[in-house]
Image (tube, rainbow, N blue to C red):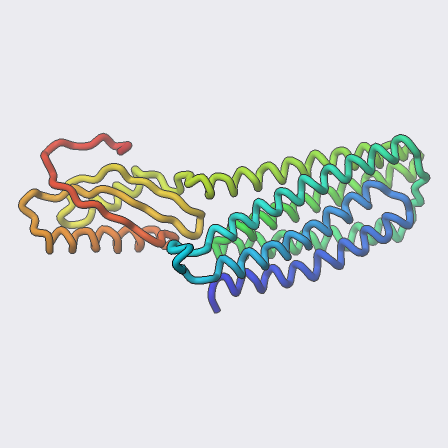
Length: 293
């Protein structure tokens, strides 16, 4: 089973759980007029929507290279994480609108033991989903699964704030429900910003591995006298490297070709996440490059 197929399976499992949790929270939130529970329910619906976006993005990312995308389609997985961020910001705006509406026109909140039971069960489900996605995200080195797990983690804090607001309403302080909704909005927006920055780093070719560490590995290859201009880009699971290797001027083209292959193999062995290494051979002139080159 390929990596992307495994990721799709994880997303299908979590999609079913997220939609179920969202339906329960939203339905009961409407019943008791709790804006914080409604907000939590809407957020869970967006969890499910993000799973669908992920499934589409992973499907496109799994396509092989072609004439229009000779380097493959893997960045569509990263684009999917931006889709999650957009949905999160939309959810935050909707929650703020609902909170303002409730502030202008107060509603009585019906607090029952059923509400606490529902929130407790859904909280446990969210903890399981977050743990499962985090473990699979690290195992499969999937930036989307890790982002989705981070999204689910916010659900856990949100559910806790909802439980607190229900307790406050039971004690005669329904305004806490609206304050909790605003707090939820802040958490959601922060989560969206974090996901957006992570995805942007990949799409803007941010460095992935410290060049000094790569140079240390390269210098152990026979025939390599020095190395410089080491650059990395990509995601945590799919890194591309290009670098310059200096060899003795007397080295034949054939031997230089072997050295380049050895450099590539050594780097990939040291860093399994590296997909491609482009090696440019240069003659060594006796001058040492600086450590950060």
